Length: 306
Image 1 (tube, rainbow, N blue to C red):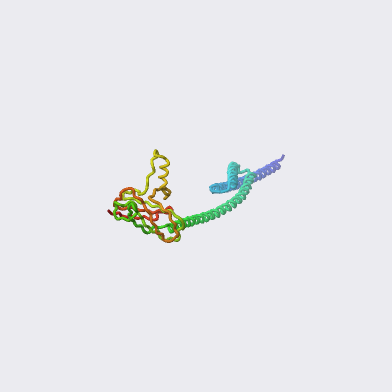
Image 2 (cartoon, rainbow, N blue to C red):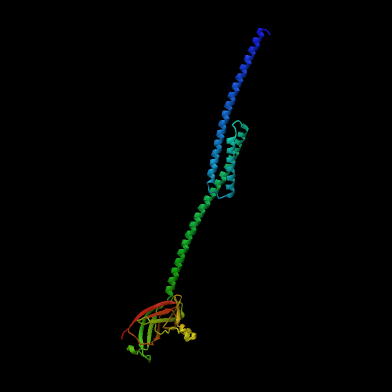
């Protein structure tokens, strides 16, 4: 090999090495830029996954009245978490897997849009049903109030009609009678009390035969004309007979001094009743109470003077 040939070969080698060096540095620069680009894409993809995970967390806090949809959301949320964890550990140089994860993100977004549509539809339906329930509840409450008012009005009307139909004793006078049933003004000779009374006209009262019960109480509150039930040892039959001198008033059985049956036609009625006296008449105020149809229809204080 001559000297000229040697230097030609050296020149060729230098040029080749320079070309190889240029290609190496150029490819290395492109590779670095590609890695940087892929790193950026991975970070952006990771941020998108994180944002999507946050959105799923937000939907999980909603009160979704649909168990099936709630389960689907939970599964998709877990799927996003799994893909996010895989993305975090995937190397930036694994371009194929990153591209697949990007496609997975697009699929999840599509699914999520459908779920969002269903949730919005469900929420709109729930809101409509809630408003309808509020309206129906208000109407029911108003109806109950109206029914209560109507019942109260009916009760008041019934009470008014009942009071209107009640008989009323408008006057009562006392006459003392002796043993021969003659009038006397001498109290010590009195053996019977005669009461003359008047019942007012009442066209709303049901006409027919009625029982009048009268209680006559002396100044000490004792009931005249009434014999207390006999003691049990004196015979159950006697006790039963005496106990029949009672009538029902306000869900109780109370005693009476005398009773009288009369026919009421709706017109003013004038009647007379008698109360026997077993003991000496004493001076003072006597109370005469009249009862009929289960009602107290008159009460009169009458004074007896010696």
